[in-house]
Image 1: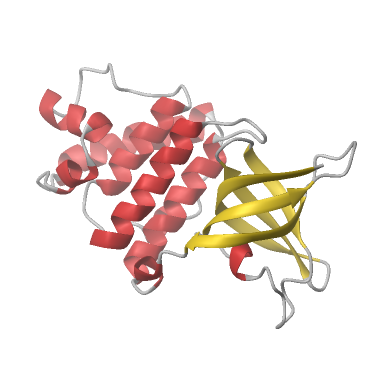
Image 2 (image 1 turned 135 degrees about the horizontal axis):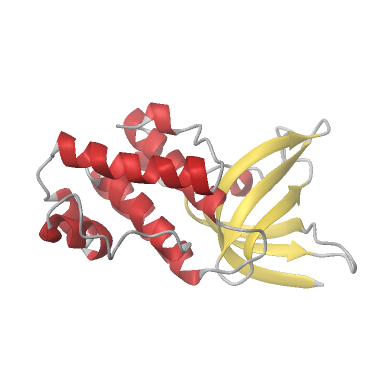
Length: 208
């Protein structure tokens, strides 16, 4: 079976000598582990589509009885070049991808999470990092995964809490940095990942 879908590359890892296993978060089919054949060769035609943070229009082939598609073509829609040129933005983008990856079961479509990630990457690519971005993204991703705190009254004031959960990225950027409130939010998120999910976010030490 051949099918096409839009997707964002969350991570990649080598397979054998020349291939890659690429985690692609697609709009309609959810998170897929995809085989990209021969992309580690210098002449690999689909190499760009297998790089982390790539947003593309992909074509996959799925053999009958298999859950492991092979990428057979596609086109890059954005490589988020400004993010790749700024180390802090790159770390944050990789953190976004890890959060979504850890909160998303395989082959479980979530257009809301897909839209959250794509919108956050576009915002970061255009405007760079800011104090509340990471926290707002994580709270929203947790909400969509069923672990949210939106109705929690304790902690930051209501206006800040609402902006973090539902404000535009521009509004989030306009929020005044508040280290104490930021640590409160970080503590909530750490407890969910550690206690409810048993997850250690490897990118967390590299982001503000």
